Image 1 (cartoon, rainbow, N blue to C red):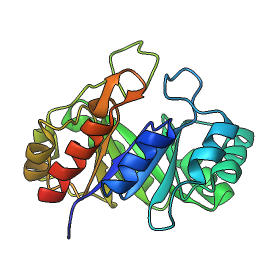
Image 2 (image 1 turned 180 degrees about the horizontal axis):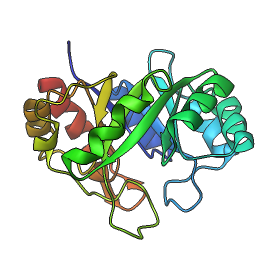
Image 3 (image 1 turned 180 degrees about the vertical axis):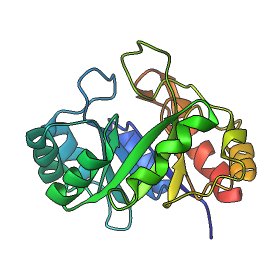
Image 4 (image 1 turned 90 degrees about the vertical axis):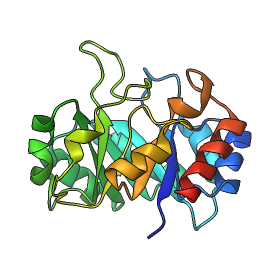
Length: 212
């Protein structure tokens, strides 16, 4: 199966169009006010309207309340809700409420961080292994931090999964080769500054993925 890619944290029409033109299977919209990539509902709706049916729209949340989740799903016509810092029970609730797919992000630094993965069986549709951010960091991701991919060696994934955390044009081919990731997720690795996506980097990243 070909490796697919999600370009996350998109916030302009031009960069969204670049991700779609480059062959991204998923596009991610961040709904989390502390993030430099945060979208209000009006901007979310405007960007989501540009996405063709064959590309999945992912809303990225940090343990959202029900009102924010439902307003975002309605505004963006979201296909997926990606949930950070959210318990399995809450993930299951969000999946049922939104009637969208639910991806559960697992923050990884050591092999022990994978121990909670089986707990999401029956609650999530996919696991997203992301790098654990430094203690006290304001954001759970999008900071260019990667984890040691060796911790995934031999791990029996209990659900479909994706790899995130510090990926960029220079390392994504190696990441795919070493982990066997079926889906890779990038945000800061295709930016020129925090929250500012670079169309050339998006295109180059997607070319590397398609060649892997």
